[in-house]
Amino acid sequence: MKKMKKALSIVMTAALTMSLAVGCGSKDAGGSSTGDAETIKIGGIGPLTGGAAIYGQDVKGGAEIAVQEINEAGGINGYQVELNFQDDEHDAEKAVNAYNNLKDWGMQALLGTVTSAPCIAVGEVAYEDNMFLLTPSGTAVDCVKYDNAFRVCFSDPTQGVESAKYIGDNGLASKVAVIYDNSDVYSSGIYEAFAKEAENQDFEIVSTATFTGESNTDFSVQIQKAKDAGAELVFLPFYYSQAALVLQQAAGMGYSPIFFGCDGMDGILGVEGFEAELANNLMFLSPFTPTAEDPKVQDFVKKFEEEYGHTPNQFAADAYDGIYAIKAAMEEADIKPDASSSDVCDAMKEAIVKIEIEGVTAKSLTWDASGEPSKEPMVVKIADGDYAVVE
Image (tube, rainbow, N blue to C red; front, side, top):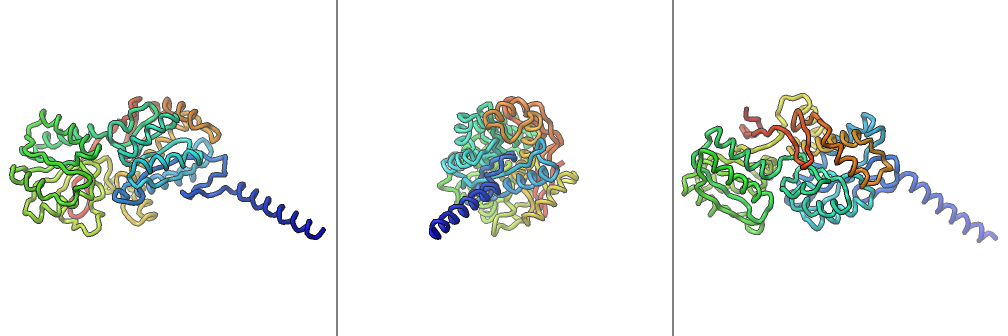
């Protein structure tokens, strides 16, 4: 009898423990509660480790600040918001795995992915699932090729066209060289649009050189080609990590043209071991600069620096605006925590084209059914080791 009472006590204790665990909400690998049915669940995907980690980490940080602000202000439609951000290491297969983890967690909308190739891969399964997707920084055209997908950033073609126009309109150079990664959809997409628009501008592309993801450490041949062609400006439509090497190697070769990049250039001043003075006068297209005097921008920058110990890049700003866009669309559509992800998607596809937000990447940010945002581009120039908007 004593043994039976003891066994019954153990069973009841175990049951009570299980009940408490479910009531409090269990934690998944991403650190988000999965047991609370009274919260709106937003997933995030991006590189938190690996070569593109600076993008994913800042996207996660920008999104977390927005979620914290929203929850402190009462949430979305009166409900608190949970953000579960998963690492994809800038790898398409791992991004799809992360997406499936988030779907099992109960994700109702996705902020992601951060980089283009993983975003395209995730876009396919998100379309099959009818999951609403808003990428903060996936610039490739195919990132938003389906009607459930939207973006905060500019597309690759837009960046290429606007860069060529800016160089031509401002007479920055008459001879231009291009170095780009022909193995990367981001880099090659920008280059193609840039080269096409260059035909309408008063400058000549005198040198075009490529590299691949497997040969992206020695740029001496590409730099020498641009130098021999007499290029006064070199267009670099790729990411900051490789751009830092180009600037270092060009300086070592005694070549100092104007260097002009796109949004992937943001973060170059944070490269370990990179001498900031090498980036002086570097220009790049960007929707955000942390030195802008706008109070909204300064408030965001202050919070980000206090929380994460460094200045946010434009990917953090895109994510911050992206979360607020999701909030505005969910409020327009009156989304509740018990809504299925498919129902959320159907409602938000109609809602997002009706909203307008004032963000840190634009005073006015709207979307159309193509998934593209409407906002004004700006050019940032590095001077004295810091970023400044070119008026």
